[in-house]
Length: 266
Length: 273
Image 1 (cartoon, rainbow over the protein chains, first blue to last red):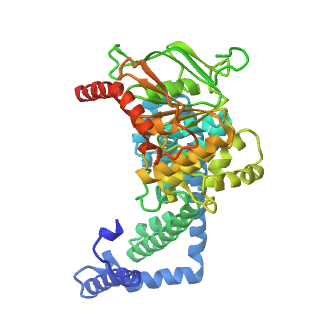
Image 2 (cartoon, one colour):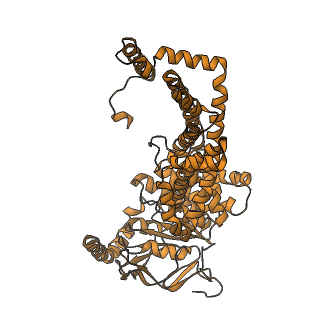
Image 3 (cartoon, rainbow over the protein chains, first blue to last red):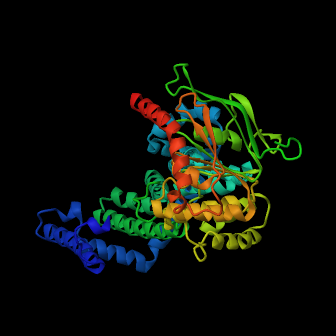
């Protein structure tokens, strides 16, 4: 594809342009609030937001809340992924089970998960586990559907070939089904991690005593727009860093796959 | 033919394969109708027929991947029930595990047989060089060319030492030059330890150039075996050169005379569909 595309500038130039967009955004924001076209009370000012964020990091208050959100995200991701893989395999290998449960899986997946947050808070308290539970309900379905697909879409020829080479059903699981399913899980890793994070933050936002979502909620409660924007900034940086880490892990684990595809299989 | 002393490598007895029709209306589709033939130990037999004549179906029956609706398959005197353990299968489509390197793909069959991973890899190395892929062991299938992938598949099939090799148009996706090279290499490997081969192709020239015997299948549905030709060309052969010899041309003319009508029928069928 690359050879057919128009000649694009080199990587450093693109990076510079990307940085330019960021600076332009802050500049416009600054000019608009400085000239009072936008009220600093409702929109904050970039200077104040950056200063607040900096102060939070230097004083160390933010680290504790970041840690809590990170822990919730990690737990939701791990539990949701393991459960998704287990159930995905089970459903894909047991057609009757998948047929019987199909409408219920679809119904639960169609339910907006936010409405579960108060229930989880009621059941599991205001600590981290109600947020983990919310994250799990989000992560589980992504992983579940991908594993299900991965097992179903194993090439029948590859399967027949492995059987002709003498593979037992255990061999087939280990050498054919699992690698195929995992490749689908990894291709949805970005979404899964993102959803684990959404679960954690939304959970905190709706009722908690710690975490980034809690901080944003607190700031909103006292019309502290600078605090809200500062919380959003920290959250964004945090997500970008996690996403970069996921990309690295993905490259390492999926090195057998052609690089030119846009994430989809085949 | 000597009976009990040397049971044929493969024997199909009146094999009929009927499939439910794809639209589920109850009308079924018969791919193969009453196919019977034998392949002697060490013999190279090709089956030619027009597209859609159920060639692969017969091979799948021989491999034990498909249970025939009627009739039975025997391999070295043993009825084929479930996967035929004496058979190796080279598929037309890509069959390598894309998540395994070339070396691990070749070693897979040994691993499935309980050989440790380290030993399986060690024994796979010489097989990679035998198919001309020395130094390519750590490449993944998508990093290899189509011809190289076929070589890996060949090594993967041969490493477990099958007594009979079933090949379903294994080289049909390759360009002519690569294909002739692969055909010669296959003949060399085959000459080294004379396994039985059932080679399926729609290319009559390929069939004649490689085989001891050519079977002709009629157009589907309900394909039947309608011809059998012994190819008494000298071995060793070079598949490119042998095509120029008068004996080859005579055989080709004779078999093509029968095959042409079936190809035309098969073509009319596909147009109707």
